[in-house]
Length: 443
Image (tube, rainbow, N blue to C red; front, side):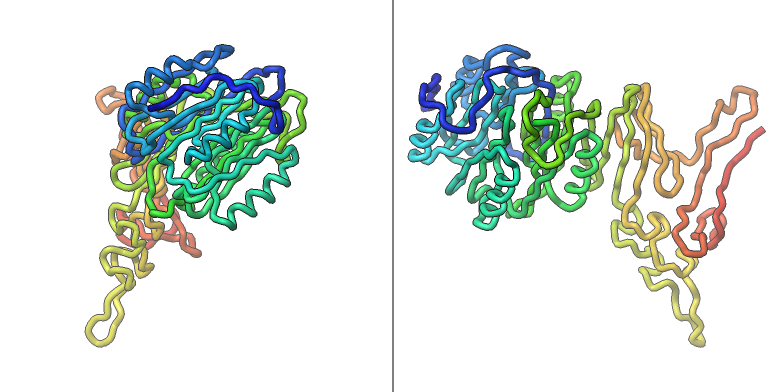
């Protein structure tokens, strides 16, 4: 039977939350596939309002458990779902530090699964069924002490599972037997900075497992999983329409995996190295996994358009990077011991479609419902807004041929030159040739 805990009055010990509320300015949403959740729901209280405790109780009664929560620009933001693996849950919501309450529930094999604050109140969620075997929590004002403690616990098999900024310092929760294998964390004072770092984590095979903001900096944790599972992930900062974004991700079979919040600086000392008192106006970025094994990264621009970067496995070599005609040999030995270079790759041995990369990269822009872009080989790609734009078009006329006016077709093929001699195989010329382009002109 789930139990709703009311405020528990105990002496205030450490990790105190400031008594003056400050404006929240961040909502960080992370969605992910293959979480296994059923019937996920979410709700927020609105800025300046109390936690919606009745909504929690109603969803508990319907068999859902809290999976994530934070205080955000939308107030208290809570996600709940069925089929989470949890078997029991309780929470504390109040100004007081619930040390005795946490200790008592730990004796009942409950572990912290959510922690959040709004500088005036704590929101702790403890659960059974986590799989954790031990847990440590700490929050030093000097981040270097936190860093030392994290390193010490990493060596003992603990991994970061929760974190929040209290208004004066970071509070960290680390758990043993979390299911995480390797783990990293990093900081960034702007969206552009963390966006580049997040993309590197994904490229390195790591998944995001925590996103928070505090003291002018983003705090991001990425991890690999002991079972080697990988999942599509999407993140966004301060979506103008959270409902629309979440609905879109549900349609993409991604559930909300983590909700983060945070504060701007308000005179307190930065809690982490290199904290910056100013932050750039954050943009929005997310990754959409594609059914062919590739992905598309979207970045929202200030003018409302979206810049896209799509990466798909090469449709010719399927990632091997080798020429599919000579299978990477560069040619064939003929009669008389004469070596004949491969006519497909010109003896370069690499796949002529991806030029030895193993994948094709397409950069583009989505605006007014249409996405247009060019891949790394110069092909034109067009598609509806929100798609990868992977449909390949060999020509696109401006204006139409029936207009009676002169027009010029865009580049049909432009080789991606990678050789030291600035040459590459051109399928139109059917030979290795110096840098050039093919443009169709019509008059």
